[in-house]
Image 1 (cartoon, rainbow, N blue to C red):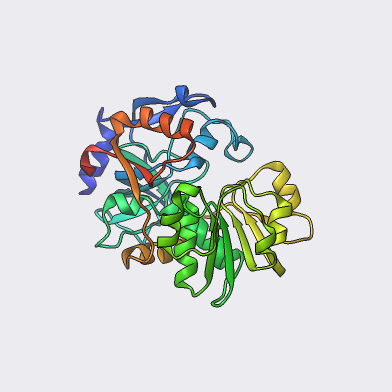
Image 2: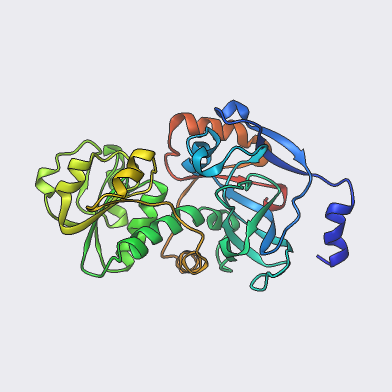
Length: 328
């Protein structure tokens, strides 16, 4: 797109569609609205979205569960993970250019990926591997980086160690299992009894139900990674080897308080680190990291699909992907 074309985005009456909300609340607060395209500031990139992926974080933020972090500014967009094409760049952006095919995540405080265009910080956007579809690329930013930072950053996982993933077939759990296995660690985990075959196909062993007896697994794991946020502290400690760590990615005030105390427990929120996102994108491009897609819907039908996903609590079989006209 030429500079004149880019300026026309803001010099005309052109609008774009975006899922917005004007107060915290349930799914009913979401609306598909026509808004002005956002203008990238210093260090920012405007992406024309081809595909976006839903995460539990999206409705936790929209419901107000994380307002201590996200603030009270409205209207707000919905959605973080996206894949698309760079439409415009702000001052100081040097790593990306107009026309680049990219994947990334919108900032925690300014989401908006469920839209025809989304604004993101350059550090949270990387080049999409050529062989990766926009839909597959959109599945990986948040879950991939969260898993990578927990295992490689926080836990410093090494070959020969063992990890237990509570919720091993959720988005983060599945990504963590694949990352851990390719780094030479063994992986055990919990999942629904009906999904044992899927877990076994990933290479997970042992496999237990969510409500399991921890005694037979006492002291077997260097890391307990609670992706669901529901593993009792006593059970997690039982699973640990001496000196092991427990990482939880579902923050609450109580968990932050416990994380500040001496001991193995730490709560973690993923951070937009370019090198980590590049590592995750490279793994996806090589076929090492793949997340299944359960359903794909157009942006115009996204609100009912998001509402259903939120009410069921999980997308069985994979991610919910939202596409735009240019992504079809």
